[in-house]
Length: 185
Length: 259
Ligand SMILES: [Cu+2]
Image 1: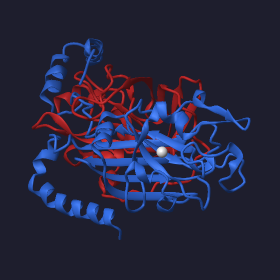
Image 2: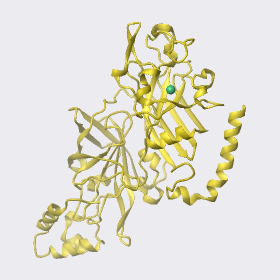
Image 3: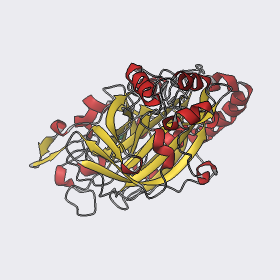
Image 4: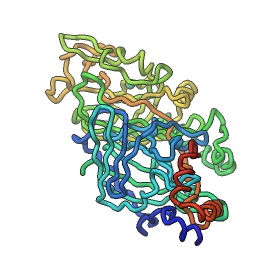
C-alpha cells in the first residue's frame, strides 16, 4: 500500500479483459493469400498510440530455456529473429518487459489494449506495417501453448508478448499476456 | 492399405505406450532415442520465377525418427498433383533469384538449380505408402492443388532426422504453371528429374526452411510495479524523503540489463 500511495507511477500494470482468461477457441487461420502482406524488412520501432508507447525494436534470438529472449533495454521492445518480420507473411513475434527492477518497462501498458485498437511497426525499408488488435489472452507459464503463440500463420500476424500475473510468494510473474493483431488500421 | 503404411502405423502403436511409460524424458527436453524432441516451423513462400502467388506453412513435430507433418498450401495449380519433400543436409535455405537459369528463353529455377541451397530429397511427403526418396515423383500419391492441408505421421531416415534437428531441413512443394495455361506443359522443356515429365510438373513452387520454434513463456518482468513486491515498498519508502519521480528516474538510469 505504501508503494501505491507514494508512487502512483508504479501501480500494477493495467489488467487485460476477463475474456483474456476464457478458454476461447482459436478460429482456423485463413488460407487465402494476403494481398496486404509486405516484403521482408526488419522492424525499427513500434507505436501503440492508446498507451502512448513508441519505442525502438531490438532483435533477439531464442533464450537458453527455449523461449524467446528479452530486449537488453527494458524500455525497448524486441523482435524474435526466428519469426517473420512484422507486416510480412507469417506470425511476427515481438516481446517486451512489463516492468524492470525499477519501474514500468516498454510493455507495461499492454493490458489496456482491447480488440480494435491499432498499432504500427516502422520498418527498415521505410514502410510502416499497420495492425489492429484481434485477441488478448493470458496464458499460464506452466500451460503455455507454444505452438499457438509462436506457430506459423499463412497470413501476416503480429504477436506481442509480455508478463502477467505477479506471484508475490515466488516473486515472479506466473503468466504471459499474449496479444495478436492482424494487418489493417 | 499397402505394406509400408501398415508398418508405420504399427510403429506408432508401439511407440505410444513407450512414451506413456517415459514421459519425463520428453518433458525435460532430454534426448529420446535418436535425439531431442523438436518442433519445427516453416513459412512457405513462392520460389523466384515460379509465377506462384500462393503461400503456405509447415509444421513438423519430431520425436525420435517419427515426424508428425502438417503442410498447408494455397494458390497452386488446380487439379494437378504437387510433389512435396523434405530436402535435407545442405544450406537449409530456399534458392534465391540468382539460382535461376534460362530455358526456352524463360528464366526458371528447376529442382536441380535449388539443390545447392535446400539439398537432396530426404523424405517424400506422400499421402500414403512409401516416403523414401524413391517416391519423389509418385504423382498419384501427392496432394492436388490449388489448396491442400496435408497431415501425416511418418518415419524418417536417420539422415533426415539429423538434418531436421540441425535446422537444415527445407519443405519444397513442386509443380508450377509459368505460362498460366492451367496445366503442366513443356514450356520450360522436360523435367530435370524425369525426362518423361514436363519441367513445370517438377519445378519447385513453394519453399520454406524448417526452423526450431520457440518454446515456453517469456520472462519479461521483475515485479517492481507490483505493490506487494517488498523491493518496491522499500524503494518507495526510501523515496519518501526525495521526490518519488527523482528516485524513479535515478533507478531507471541505473537499469541497464534485465532478465
Ligand atoms: Cu522436392
